[in-house]
Length: 236
Image 1 (tube, rainbow, N blue to C red):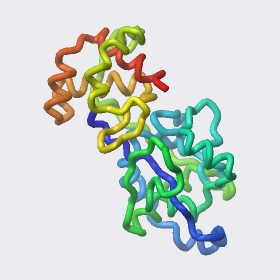
Image 2: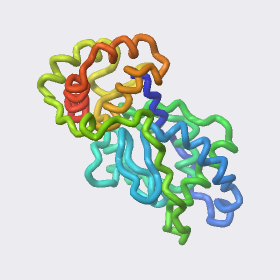
Image 3: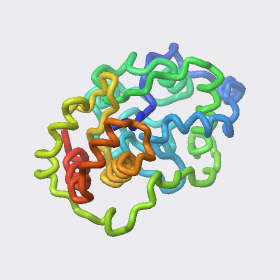
Image 4: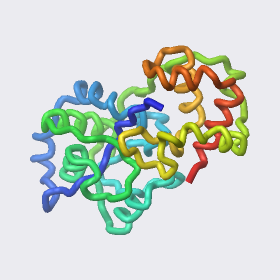
């Protein structure tokens, strides 16, 4: 499904963390960074009430150990980064944004990176607005985006049959990789149920511009969409 999940990815950092005063000088325009972060919002949430999506939430990212959040199914590559003791300081986050997958092999991330240094500094300034430590920076207003499709509550409340979803998923898996790698096609493995359902209905109503997905979604009932969502949410 054409959900270009431009998630933050890891890369090798220059040796040593930048001093705090240098870090402050490099921080860019947080307002502009919020706009650029729209590329990441398909997979990541940030701000009060942020939750895990395809990627983990990004609150308190500065100073946090990679792969350290509980109740999130990190890739094997990110778990290796955790075991290696990687900590997200400014320099490493800057490198992470610039050159995805250079450090963590086998990651499910599909973001190709921000090559422009100013873009990265602006995004990092925005992320710092949601990190109270190591500096006391108050959190900004929530950044939640409206749903693409305003679905009736009864549609969102359908509990999908994951076994039936597995039966239906054969067509999906002709393009999307079961192991969650992107290979040029966005991952839908471990996609939260509500996000999956909303996206499929957006294709069904032709609000998302992909003719093949519009055709496939148009053939599915509400119950079949819910079944696929239940299957892919738990797919290992």
